[in-house]
Length: 73
Image 1 (spheres, helix red, strand yellow):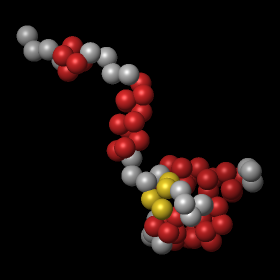
Image 2 (image 1 turned 60 degrees about the vertical axis):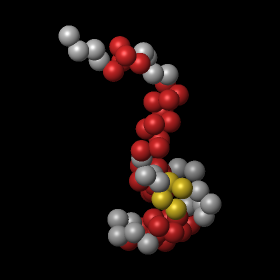
Image 3 (image 1 turned 30 degrees about the vertical axis):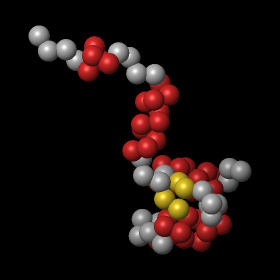
Image 4 (image 1 turned 180 degrees about the vertical axis):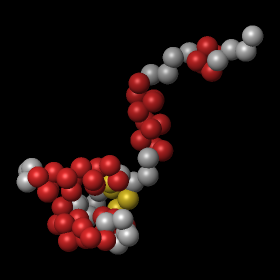
């Protein structure tokens, strides 16, 4: 009977899983997001809210914009 990967390798620590997931999710610079077609209607807000030196995922940007619209600081 074939063995599963988990049986061959053993349990994977949560830190490794988190690192792997984060490395697969693409991140973008502020400039890339501001000039993207996805956020064409929110360019002014992104220019004001995002940091030039950070990289963001789409999920992070969507949350930042949602919080901004709600008035959350």
